[in-house]
Image (cartoon, rainbow, N blue to C red; front, side):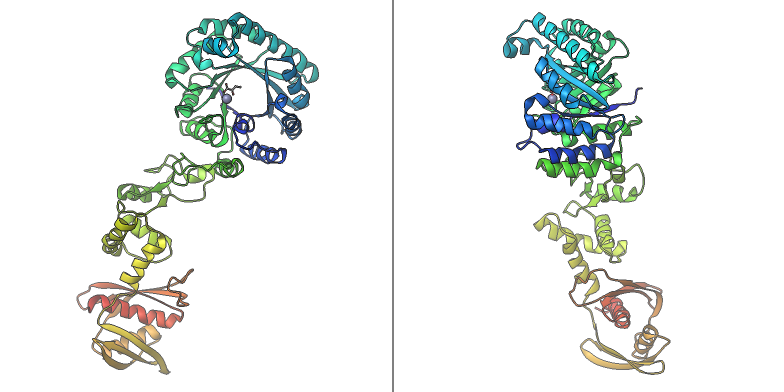
Length: 506
Ligand code: KIV
Ligand code: ZN
């Protein structure tokens, strides 16, 4: 298979469809992004359309990097072709891109011209472009587009015959646009295959698919496998009406199907965000790959699969690893009434609060009930339940104070079933001494685990900076997890013991 050749049309087809077309400075910025992406060709504009467009084509041609093909659009009229040559002729590899329809419908109802007239016009334009561009730059190339190629099933023999003459006249690239997407990808690609096999092997076949029925990506990807090597794409699928073929989707689909794609895939996400801002066109939530929701999971089954395969290249419920396109965010786990324990566990853990899967199971129905009323819950709303049900659990114990007396002696004050108790305990630290004091009060427990975490955020607004997690073992070997937060680390430890005891003594 030939390496695909990415021909970017964001600055031409994309630009011409904007409510406010870009200024030169904006086009320059986008051109730099396309360089980062490493596209192989950029169609910089339509220089005959306005003085501004002419100027920006000329400036971008100056900025071209090595090996980049700089192309500009011209109707099959000499003045348009001249404008292309004088604006971009000095680029390292300039390309005159001229186009004319050969579709029966369009020739009759829009141009009101005979096919023979259109064929002659196209051939002569290509001849003119080739001769004149070569005079200015020996690297110059000519591309011819059969506008409305998708509507040429009826007269495909005439189109092929004309294209053979167009190639002889100097066009080395034949672009076959699906100017308006009306048919199945396979129906369209049958025509592409006919052209491909009828023209000399060294003619590059290009596709330029509009997305009127939402199948442009499929047509372009399958078109590559059918022999087209130049793929005309727009960032974020910008372009007339429903847009052109989306650059990211084609690049990633080919990559996922074993094709060596010569672009920097890891620049896709950033570029897409920038172009969305500059075009003032939001990326819709569900947009493949780059949409805010493209990597979000809400059903419990999907969340479970996503989390189990999180660090793998092949994800259970995603087409790519987000980092492939430079997306920094992980797969988003959003909690709704459809979600389950895995989401609770992940969301709380990711927020920096320890939780066991058993506790997540306990919290899930409570959180689901809230979500049934409210829809998707924020992390804070889920954490509120965690604080209430796990951290601030109410029971028979109430911690009052804990103070150092002398040596290894501490004094613990607490209430048990509202009765105030004061006990002393010894130990080589507050935790030990507190457990000793509790043993002296008749509540013996052994410590099997202890860890303290620094808190990034104080969800209580209490100035707490540490969270202690302890595991206590009861008389029958049962283990209880206690947690507490406080700005004083020793007090966080002691409060964690009470948190554990309150789970046993209700
Ligand atoms: O959609 C189209 O046919 C075009 C041509 C000018 C290539 O944009
Ligand atoms: Zn187009």
